[in-house]
Image (tube, rainbow, N blue to C red):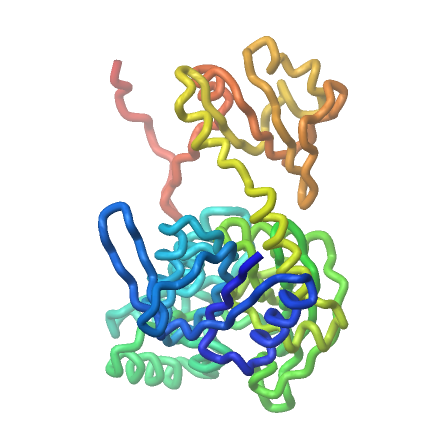
Amino acid sequence: MRIAILSRMPRSYSTRRLRQACVDRGHQVQVLDTLRFSIMVEKDEPELFYRHRRIPAYDAVIPRIGASITFFGVAVVRQFEQMGVYVANESIAITRSRDKLRAMQILSRHDIGMPPTMFVRDKDEILPAIRRVGGVPVIIKVLEGTQGVGVILAETEKVAEAIIQTLHSAKQNVLIQKFVKESEGCDIRALVVGDRIVAAMRRRAAVGEYRSNVHRGGSIESVTLEQEYQRTALRAAQIMGLNIAGVDMLESSDGPQVMEVNSSPGLEGIENATGIDVADAIIENIENQVLFPEVDLKQRLRLTGGYGIVEFPVHNMPDLEGKPLRETGLADRNIHVMCITRYDSVIPNPRADELIHTGDVLLCFGDLHELRGMMPPRPRRRRKGSKTGKKGPTKK
């Protein structure tokens, strides 16, 4: 294959390792400076130029987009997508993950643990926001910060308020986040590639430091993840739509708490800590994606009149839970279960004697009317502190 690595730092550890992995696996590879591209937008003929020349045909692109060039870098990745080139991380997924607030808003809709977080602009809302996340000490994060830069621990309300107001006056958007004391200056980085975790490490902050980033002097060690942490890391990457991701989690008394999902994770720390060839795993995954691309079933089946595809979790469904597939009655309703996702494992084309467990996620194809009937109703949220009163008149 012919592979392009988008990177402004060809001599960085991660770029060099990815390049070497391509060579070792017999591929042609080029490292291209992201800012050297020119984008040609024209009807039916999207084009990219690099250093004044039209780029050759590539089979795959690995984006290594720095935070400072997110807008232009994502535009280049999007242009490759328009040209039909496979990209290891899609442009929309990079955009989601790079915006810390947007990422947390997306993750909050799913069963993913995260520290309570507030986002405010009005100075009068700063102190109430601090108290809502649990009070001081709190973590203050600049939305565009990376590698621990723009992450501040505030011990008192006055200090926190002064820091936030100063950052606001500098036109910086900031998040106010609960400080998870029991993590003790440690966090976990899980490196997700495709549908598996290829490596994981624990990062420990240096003495006198609360940020565990390696770039801030933190130490690292290999770690074997418990199943709950594996599920959280995989789900977080999948929800963000990232094929390659570094998922950072805190070890709290309530289980894993996701801090960030990184679309361009560094390889040096985790390869040194674990001894695992992460770069090779990334290139192997790209080979599989290019040679055996995933079929978007939703796109394929949308054209079939009256039929569709739905994915839903099994929860409070006595007709399904604890029963073998043959006794659920789904086949009689013209519904075929194509696969079952159970925690971090997938059971494709399950047999008729496969038991359905609470928490399973079923991917089903069948009659749209029947599928709609299978979907659980959306819960109606009640405001906190509200009391149940008399029901109003029912419209008929």
